[in-house]
Amino acid sequence: MSEFQLVMPKMGESIAEATIIKWLKNEGDVIAIDETVLEIATDKVDSEVPSPKAGILVKKLYKDGDVIAVNMPIAIIELSVSASAAPASPVTPVVQAPKIVTQIEATVNTAINTAAPVSGVAGSNKFYSPLVLNIAREENVSMSELETIAGSGNEGRVTKRDILNFVSNRTGGIAQPVAAPVSMPAAIPTPIIEAPKTATPAAPAAVTSVSGGDEIIEMDRMRKLIADHMVMSKHTSPHVTSFVEADVTNMVLWREKNKKAFEKREGEKITFTPLFIECVARAIKDYPMINCSVSGTNIIKKKNINIGMAAALPSGNLIVPVIKNADTMNLIGITKTVNDLANRARANQLKPDDISGGTFTITNVGGFGNLMGTPIINQPQVAIMATGVIKKKPAVMETEFGDVIAIRHMMFLSLSYDHRVVDGSLGGSFLRRVADYMEQWDVNRES
Image (cartoon, rainbow, N blue to C red; front, side, top):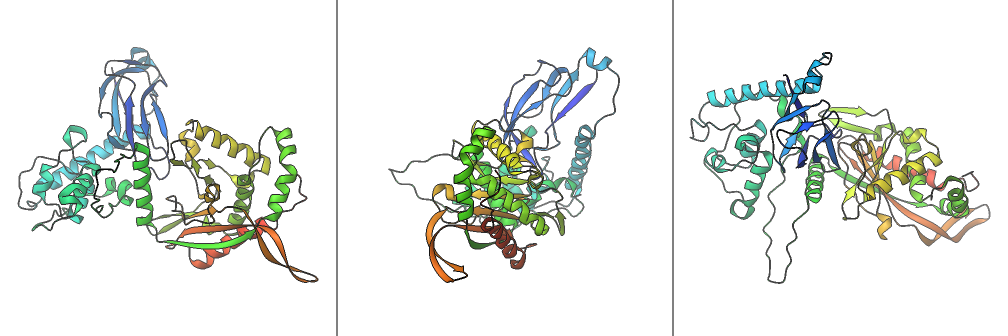
């Protein structure tokens, strides 16, 4: 009988790894086609991994809690007689990928073993990935210290998380200088370290004192992943934030006039979010370079306008479902999509496709009564906009009879953008254009 390697699926454009939450099948269990084998989690969503082939689970390559890179094999399935008797089909690229990685790892291992002794320790039979060695070099971790780290990876291999935990806990989180830091062998090939390249470790956390009355609350799994993602974003992109104040009186009046009829006709409540998304999509078409991502020294200009909306979960954590091709939808379509994604987010029923592919993000800090915020960019995007609370304020209005002071519905907008590729002119002009579309909302338009 032939064997099939089940691999860790890619859960989104910016996701390079996932955590195994729970194996639902044990070694020796029979698996049907598309039957769920295990549950995994990323910093964005939990998901199930089905088997594309029927067979018997002969080996689990990792255990619960392990963090695995995408496209790496996680289990070996022995194909059943019925499956092996089926017409042969070409091997899919995703199955071949782990073999290439294995060959590269073998080359890396050979390079390490044949290189000059590192930090005065020779003959080590442990394998350390280039990423781990690079972190060790940057954090001044000697090879002798590296040898003492208990690895949580496959066959005791030291993972990125293991060495980062070691660095954080070493002498109260303060790194000590060592005589001979770990150095990377020059001949090591680099392809396998491209995926986690953005996850450069942050500086060790400061020591926090704890008194008798303090309560220590451990972060849950999602909060830990969100924390890592936020630190990575700030480390990757130089953030700049611009602000404008928009007069959204026409929007408020239009919604008040139409919301009951809209709900009766469409069976959906209409919030301000779909209105904001329509204005943002129009502004992106005017300034398409805000709808980009960065890959090294290349700027990737996105064809589709996929707008993410940050949604709060019952646990207090955030998730960002995505409205795909928002510029092609009318207001009814945007409203139905927004409500569907928000409801499924609260019920923890989002699928991987629902939170992937975003090109721009909106977050509503006004929902908490805040005037404005400075949001963190959702990588690999280059901009994120926050909407503040809508408040009645006296404002000066220009009329044909002169300036007057009137009560208007005002709202602050803030845009955080990646200053590597978005300068102040583009960021400020885009944000102003969004505000213009909001202020020019036709109060007499059909709902």
